[in-house]
Image (cartoon, rainbow, N blue to C red; front, top):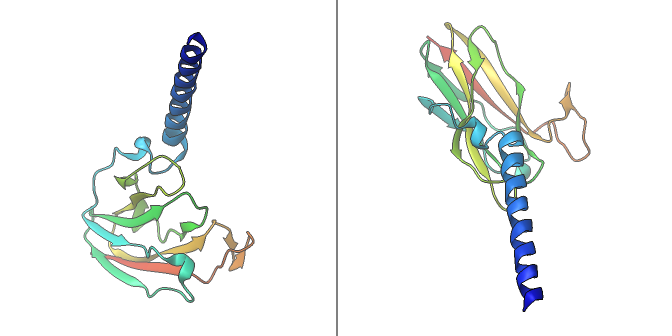
Length: 163
């Protein structure tokens, strides 16, 4: 009986340590963790495709029109897999400024769990610019993949016009 109680106490202690570790790791390293929850939801949202790994060619360019001061949210889903959409070209910084992420839904980095959030941009001045995302591990340089298995031809662009 004493051995059972000792085992249960040890198991509870290990579980508490694990939860504490995962909570700290999640908030410090996951872009959709609790640290990113402070932003407000953007007025205009455009989702990135959720099936980039199945694509065989670039996605068509989307077009968005904003007024100065409006915020654009580009919706993305990040799961436990390394391959995801990453911003390849942030466009003209005099027209759009990147902002805080807006978390739509979040979860700890465990298999099968995905976090959904908006990457936000604020319209600064009239003009037109294009934001471009590539699908992979973040390793395309001048159209050449940095990581094995990455493809630099799977892209999604959003043309933003600010009035």
